[in-house]
Length: 287
Image (cartoon, rainbow, N blue to C red; front, side, top):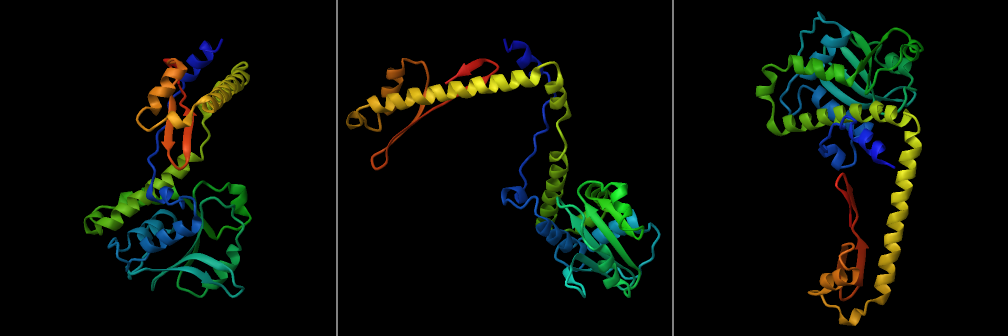
């Protein structure tokens, strides 16, 4: 009944496997504040990474002006700069020749008062306002902020950084270079992770595939519930006084007559814990 469904499903392209990043392991992979802290560290040419002005130079060349002249290669990056009305600018990059504020967007929509941010830096040398986002912000949404702001996505910034890398990499502090690579991978994981699995959507839209998938899932779920009830009945019939650690697995195995295997744990203080082990693969159904 489900042979064709499973065969069609197996023919779908496999999803790209993503390795967990350190930020993901720590549970902060989508945190905008954490991302801004990392970027501010690398935009500041005086910090310990020893990549100097790589980030600031790449941003300027990619989106602001390819031929802009800045004599001073020293860039300072401040976080959470407070405006006159107590609004906070994510990042403010300053040197003697140019000033850039960056509004960083990982997941939240762009609702910030960019005009107030720009007003805060108006008297600085060569002020620019930049919105850095995970995905492109639609043109119709950009228009409401006027034409004095620059919109760039992470992928564009990282591509420009990679293009400028050259001798910078040789001077980089190894542990911060590894951290930067992990951060970059985390950003690309977020970009890919937010894309819809179009192949699977097409699979569900063929005939009644979606209904069959739901029906198949419900039958598997019902079967698992049945096994759990079997195990509960079995537990009630076991004489716990006769069980000890060495023979627990054998005892359960004989009772079930090889029909399924169980995860069994015996703790003198906590008692017996039994759960069914279930495995469904292209070779069949195993327990």
